[in-house]
Image (cartoon, rainbow, N blue to C red):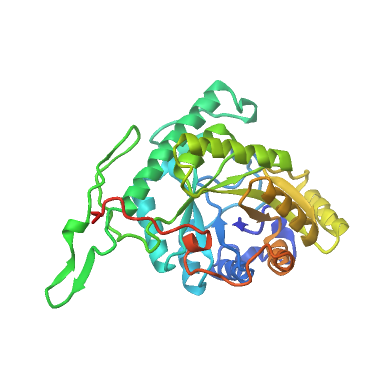
Amino acid sequence: MALDGAGWHPAAWREPVARPRELLTADYWTDTVTEAERGLLDFVTIEDAFGLQSSRSTEPDGRTDQVRGRLDAVLIAARVAPVTRHIGLVPTVVATHTEPFHISKAIATLDHVSTGRAGLRVRVSPRHNEAALFGRRTFPAFGTDDRDTPAETGLTTELFDEARDHVEVVRRLWDSWEDDAEIRDVTTGRFIDRDKLHYIDFEGRHFSVKGPSITPRPPQGQPIVSALVHRSVAFRFVARSADIGYVTPHDTEEARATAAEIRVEQATAVREQEPLHIFGDLLVFLDDAPATAAARRDRLDGLAGYPYTSDAKIFTGTPGQLADLLLEWRHAGLSGFRLRPAVTGHDLPAITRGLVPELQRRGAFRRTYESHTLRGLLGLARPANRYAATV
């Protein structure tokens, strides 16, 4: 489940179920994630960015009739962790302007406080207005017409190369403490075994990090790394650096082609023996009748003042119809799905109480949580520490 404030439709906050006065409260987020856990979902992602939300993909829009402002995603996840037991918590982090040491420490902490349910969704940001918040570098002010131009593609490639180094540093820092580095022996007065803390000595184009971390190795060893990707340069990043890639096909053939391209990149990276999930993103309007869902979408578009479009396919229909589509796309090569509720207060319960039972009836969804860790829910083994001596 992909969570973004009141929902993914820009007029979602105006719905009676939206709770707009509570969007920046702990209760709103704990209630929302608890509902997702009620539906036995693997995990939630929590949106975040350094710029305000915008109806434009490349710059601020100045609108005041839509939700603007958000809480920090990592801190939301840390607040929600103690009141949930099974569901994974995957906040968004912007690698472009954040030091990997900080992210490593934050996600390791989240994994400790959630007892093994943490992950991160890596974002890159080519937006010039977000770069201006930090003042360390400048980016061109690209518009929508600049997409796929040599300059825009070059910057995107550079940022994903940087993100690849970022993730590598984060992963090495997670391993910089061996699992048994903490002794905690009151009698001898030894709290840690210093020989089991390791310098990572990373030297790359973008980062030079000595290590070790100041946070012991996470319970999962390696929390989940994921990213939303739309084109080949990003597919390569997922194939080389991630555990999950979220993709945005609009039909079955595109789902099949996208999955195949990522698998080729995975083989090129010599990772074909490692598990890599490919999840399809869908933005959903779910109701008991297709006409009701379509009417709700039209009404929200009228409130927004324009027909809402998305990078992901917008599904409008019933839980049964959505189940049909998910199973069709699964056969096309996708291993899971990340659903974006158009209106969180309406479409999240429609998923947990309508779609989930429908999938359960078809034998396509769990009836109980099988693991207490996110890696376990996703069928991923706990990896060995790269720095630990092998016997």
